[in-house]
Image 1 (tube, one colour):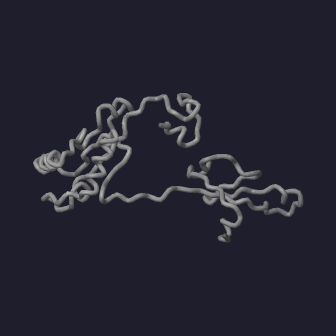
Image 2: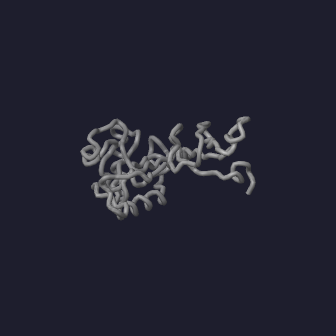
Image 3: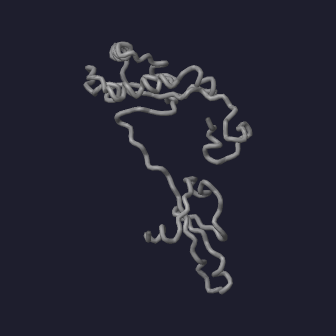
Length: 188
């Protein structure tokens, strides 16, 4: 397992020579919504099990993951949802709250349930932020300066010189993906 630093290609004082992080990390944690995810959405009633989700969660648990039942249900409706989970041999490690070991590991108990993955029927995966760059000649009337290229990032950031070896754009913070002239101009 690699730490967050080594996954980003950054140095970590605690990682071994092969990227194996020496910092103990809690097991994978999944926050799972109830209505529309574990069961069909029939709120306030309980719908039929979403068997593919139930099976996927069981597989994650068998692989060592922990899970939080993460739902808007409260009171008696929440008790019924927890009982439904138990009837389907799903035993949440927590219900609508952070795990104590995670709170201890991160040193706080934030309002949002912290997890490595969030399973929710209403989730939307946001596009990855990427910033590519193109090498263009400097716009100048000076003859010698034309041989010094400019690097123009898609976010508008510019530098002079050769392409940097950065992994993230210093201007917008997005991951950098190098575009050559053919990619930038749409030629393949």
